Image 1 (tube, rainbow, N blue to C red):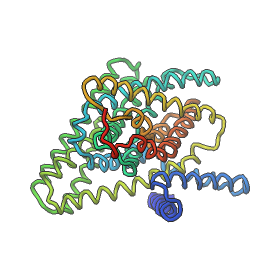
Image 2: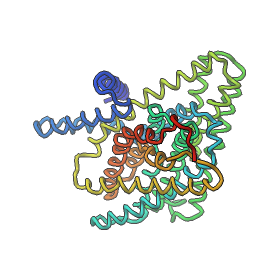
Image 3: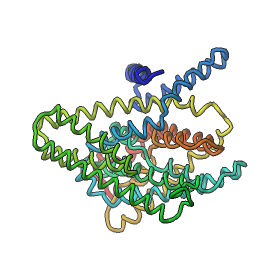
Image 4: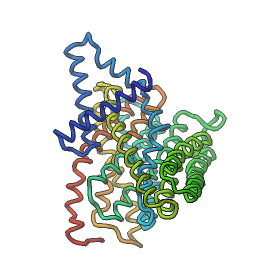
Length: 423
């Protein structure tokens, strides 16, 4: 299959499954796509059992492998999805919860990585699959960040107080970039890929963090300002939409070339354009066109991504060997998420107030998604990869379907809008 045929297949299936969900199922769009795609994958596997000579699963799996979800998402779709999410976030509300977001997106990711890594290392050891602690940390790093695409999609269907929504959205946007940096560090530790091919030491770790995270933030500010300055000098909505599109592609490409954090760079640029740019560089007509354009991009790519998550079960495989491990990873990930959210909030509650149930809502609303699957698929081949991939897929599917479908009920228990309760 060539690139055009792959795109045609994915968009066609996204439209078909989206129609089926909207017309007959009625679930939130992203969750419905995942479930229908999972059912379609199950039907393919079942057809293979009934007619093994057709090798239908093998044909579909070969086609999916041509897509290379890891490269497609991390070097293509992710930049557009992150910018589309960031451009709609209110920076004022984000600033009011800046310390909570900063701590959860940094300390929270590190705490979760260590807790998940330690627990899974012990579980794997008991199961007789002996891997190094560094490889266990690799799983902890790739599954710890909440997925901004899944989280922002969830927030479209669940009504929460603005400041709590800002915490959920802001954390998901920034911990994604931090999580990729942490993943890069621990993967280098696991594979021994230090500077100049030597051992990976403390200096290498410091260089990665400073270079990727802070460098990405600076790049995002500079690129966002250049686009903003250009947009202030004209009033032509088509060109200004093109400027925002160019901003995303050029910023992410430069970040990859300079080994900076592309996710952090495009998030910062998106926040800049969506707030400062929308207020001072766009007319009402331009603002409407820019935001509608990015809403459409978000909807299309969101649909394709969640379709791929559902179909990727055919790549992960029907291998049941790692099923107990995969199921064990779900409560481990949830427990680590609870602790990594509770620590920052308890520390900050000494000086500021948080909404009732904030810890429980942030824990259950921390959905994992395509980024975790893509990082797992990008791992080098080896005995560790199949186990990590199975555990990753189980956590992702559980979080999207179970947590996503029950989040509204959980939020409703706190009656935020029936009584103004904060504490």
